[in-house]
Image 1 (tube, rainbow, N blue to C red):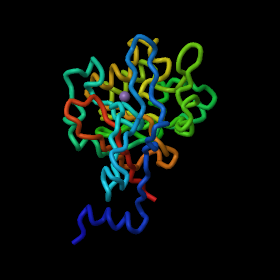
Image 2 (cartoon, helix red, strand yellow):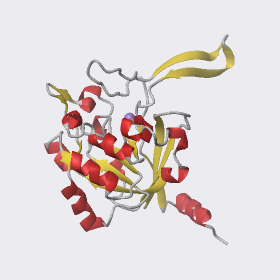
Image 3 (cartoon, rainbow, N blue to C red):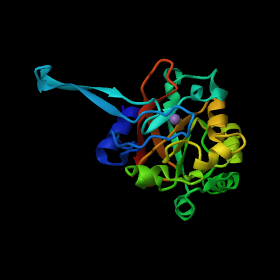
Length: 258
Ligand code: MN
């Protein structure tokens, strides 16, 4: 008698469901956010060799890592932001929230014309008119084409004279996503879940403020969103179960119907 999991395995083996990697490669060159003084910055990834099949370990190779919780493709837990300080750390997130439906809001053309493009409530309502209500328990992935810049720190961070110029929600869209819908998370291709201009919004960094304050999660630096359907994908987000962690690098995958 087939079970739901055996049906999924058959679909994977037969190609009816594909696995898409939503994770950017993580290396010493992976860009990290650059905060202005006086704020502390996160380090990029660095590695120190313990052994390489040598006198320190003749049959094995292994390294020590240094990296920030918020380095590369990563999850923001509610406790990352002051509004979510009484919420879940990354180890406490219910695992049911880490597997769910994903919908893709595509503003690639708009972000190409205006790299500082701001996603609005009207955009989201227009999406819902065409594709249905944002799924309860699901993830909204904001596709902008920004992933094409991911290996070029200058183009990826895109810092101009007035600060970073990257797309993201405006303050009202951030509030709406966090309070008007029952999504569990919001994912982006850029270095952070807020737009580059978000420091000047009211409240500052409104996606962090509202989404994390409502106990939801952020997901950054995603890859391959162009390989996902608008609706119908299942996302699997796998952060480290880091006790007290404010976030974690993740491997993010999507299961996509052929
Ligand atoms: Mn973060």
